[in-house]
Every structure is written in C-alpha cells, then in structure tokens.
Image 1: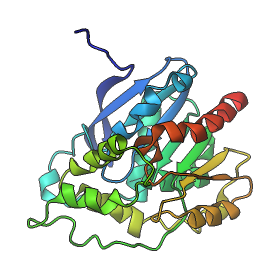
Image 2 (image 1 turned 120 degrees about the vertical axis):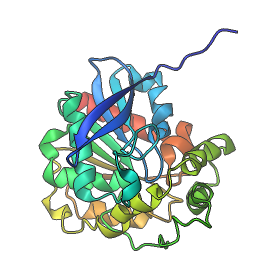
Image 3 (image 1 turned 180 degrees about the horizontal axis):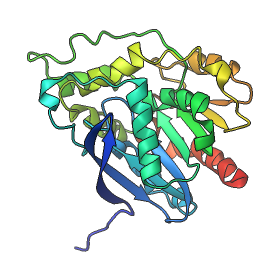
Length: 285
C-alpha cells in the first residue's frame, strides 16, 4: 500500500533563547514565497494543533504556514540543565522566542495566529512589535481573565500530569466538535512533559494582565482580529468583546459551535471563520 504523505515538512533548528541554546522543532507547509503565517500553540500542547491548516490547500496555495514547538513542548527539547529548575513561561521569554523564530526564518512582516496563551501574547505583540507583523490573529484572546483553576497541584508525584491536564481542559471543547478531533486535541495534553502545563499557566495566570496594553495598540499599523468560540468558559466571548471594544479598529467574531481549541477540535467549522480573515490579509498584502 502506497504511503499518503501530508504536505508538511518538519525540521530542527537550534536558537539561543534567554541566553541558552534551545533545539526547536519547526514545521511548515505551502509555497516558500507564500505569505508567512506563523502559528502559536496553546498552553501545554504543541504545533500539531495546526496540522489541519497546514493540510488545507485553500490556505497553503497562498500562505506559507509555519508552526513551532516552544522549548519544553512537543518535539522541542528543554534547555540543558532543565532538571535543576522549574519551568515558567513569562511574557519576556515568550516574546523573545516568537521574534527569534521569525528572524531566524527571515520572515518579513508575517501574519501570526495564536490560540489561548498564543492568543494572549498577540496583544503584547500588537502593543510593542506591531511593525514586525503584517496582521495578528488572536484566537480565544482577551486582555485578562480571572483564573477558574488552581495550578498548585498540577506537578505532583501522586497525580498523573498528562491525564489531569487533559481532563482539566476537556470541558473547553464544544459539544458539537467531532469525537475524533476532540480526542486528538486532548492527546496533545496527555503527552505534555511534567510541569509544562503548570509553567505555561504561570504566564497565563500571573504574567499576562495586558489591560494596560490595549490603549497602546494601533490597528492602522497592524490589523488585529479576535476570534473566540461561544463555548469557551476560559476566555469567554464577553472577555473577547470587552477587549475588542477597548481597541479601536479591532475586529472580533464569536464563533458558533466552537470551544477553546477551534483549529484542532473542529477544523472544518473553524475554516469557515479563518478563511475570510486570511482572504482579507491576502487582499491587503
């Protein structure tokens, strides 16, 4: 039986992040001269969440879709000596990683899409690095949320970290999402390394109150799109609408029958919302 290869190419690269060499896994699909679309995965997961975008010919005919695993995530290694420290993602280190990948790959004003914590960091990029990007898409994005979870017990020897992380986020998947893709999404969480989800949530809970940043965002410099699922109780539609209302020119859409992981939990439904955004980005390029 012949193998049916997907149109995705994966490679490894070593970048210096936070003063240390880090081996990252980077994958992409689409033409080398396409519009760069840099993709940021959610907390505790990895770039596999974007495989459906990468396999969509309606997207990859014009866009060079690029996704990478942050250090500690997916196929990217943690830095040497990781066993002697507690992993904590911060706004500074997250921003540095994104800009370093864009620079290393020589991406000229790429469009960027991020979900959940990747959606939150979009606001930081819009406030301080707007000229680096052609457009920013925050999926499940808001400037602040009150935490509904406790992270103190997420990395304990008597708790199965992968299963509890998946259980914790399982309710964020919309009930309409196909079971195949719901469990594919949760499998990424089941495979998360010890303490990684907790370390990502340090950024999300403690180091990303961006309510002071939204007045700085100028959408005439870089268009900003916010897309949130109606079933998301982590980043609620009200959170996103409040955030968009504080940013003149921001375009917000609440996605029907979608939860917190739209690109992976229900990719066919998500494309109905992302394709018009990408069409607008392409038209304005």
